[in-house]
Image (cartoon, rainbow, N blue to C red):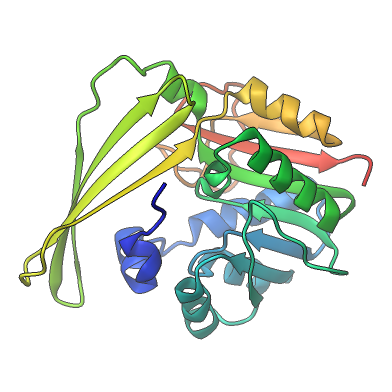
Length: 262
């Protein structure tokens, strides 16, 4: 599967496409960590541009941001300083003697664990770096929502925005493969400056909530909460003071789990 991504390779473009001026994702994460009593040392795995890691750092935590993209890490260090940034693959990482009281994995990054083996490796890596009682907080697309609609036609989504004076247009098509439990994404980019169209393809793992719960329990985690919102990517989005829903069937899934036998 080709994981090249125009936005990953161009972090400033990523932030223009997904603006978060209120730092909603970081704010939601900080309130979640506070609600469930997480200590100050946090690993943001799949940290991307570093916006959320820097927000958590500004809230008084000691944050390490890790990502596989060198372009993202360079951008994060320059534009969102404060956390320590290092290169790591979330599907298997070993940060040596570092220990954290929370691991954060946002914006569907966990879904790049496309196989059971990769999921097991991710959870093993989390166990290795978490202190006993540490939290795993993740936010992602919800497999229950997409697999329940696998037979329905999906209308392409079109988004247009301007970055540095250039108009960018993306057309995104999603296709569900129920047998492989994958959500395939095809995205075509065009601009008004004469750049040839760019088409990119990727795929995410689709976890059913019950499946994710079983994997976590098998790796020594107690699932504290598993719900569909509100969160930073839900509609309407989370606002300070909102409590988790009692459902898990909308298009986003939010996970809070505690390591019980680290």
